[in-house]
Image (cartoon, rainbow, N blue to C red; front, side):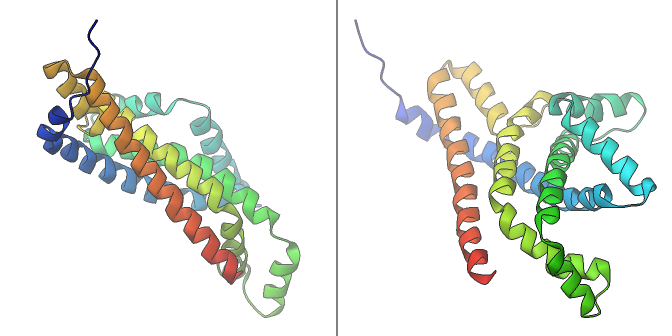
Length: 221
């Protein structure tokens, strides 16, 4: 009985296809990360606000986005809005869905971190004449972020892995390009093993970078 031999030559010959898909994956990842990081902070402040008109919608947003599948949200943005006459490009719909849901998760991570900072730091900043929002921005948030590098990093890794879902709305990222290549060649094992390696490299790079950053900020604070 003959053994199976991994065809490295096939991978080498089709590297341009993988690079093309990887480029789109990186684009979607970076845009979704940026949206989630910034959006999560805005929502976190809404969640901590004493004003009902800020707290209520921020809370509803977090509850809805965290408790519904990101794939359904993606379909809603891409197909649902099209029915209403608002057509988004596949990449735009994918980025908005990934950024939107992960912003909800990051909002809770931020909120927990900010609330974990002792009131003494905030009171000291206020005693120096800082306004509350300035004290939050310059004192409380930087201290909180140093404690949240790991959970934030985990959420960014989730975004990278979830970019594979945008293939369901015809975004030609790494997974979609691999699927099409596997269908044409029947080299399913080679294709998806290679895709797995690409994702592993991406997520490991993000984890290592954040670990390095965490050590640096710990020295500062």
